[in-house]
Image (cartoon, rainbow, N blue to C red):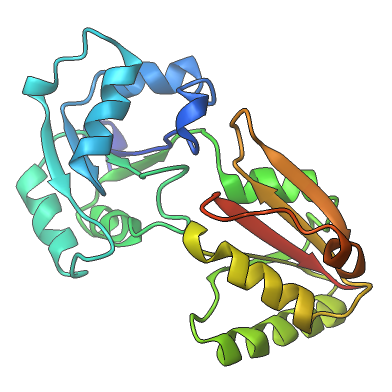
Length: 238
């Protein structure tokens, strides 16, 4: 196949905290984004704000937006890519990198089905930044995304993750909606063994960035407020 003639889908990272602006994005990425005129986004309003932050001269009137988010049916992805046709386009996450804790995977799958070239671009990922700063095993780790909303099911899952970490020598990574952080944090401290290590990484790349690793026992004595603060939790049991 002649890859030179294929249209491209660029996977575009965005800032993971509004305070960070575009400083986490390489200049080469910013330049590529400014050449595109078609974008697939989770929310048009935030996408417009991001694009305008790249350049005050960015002409939004020339841009076509297609919305694909957690409420979209997977079948809509093919329809969107059919409408885009042979144009180069960009897939924007609300925050961080597309398709990781993000609904964009179906768009990428549709692009592959159409024979498009998929081009991932470099940018900030809260998951990887938290893992890097945790002191946990970066050779073996598992990202679970969101744990169950039901408290009993969540407690059961936390015990399972703790066992898996010990058996597989594997760091366990998970997250929660910011307004439910406090409940998850309390459940971790209640159900996990006191010598299990827990890293809490919140407000990454902001002026209020907080990253700390301690045993569960120490966290029980010094529990910060995480209410409405974007947070990644990492658990490791030796």
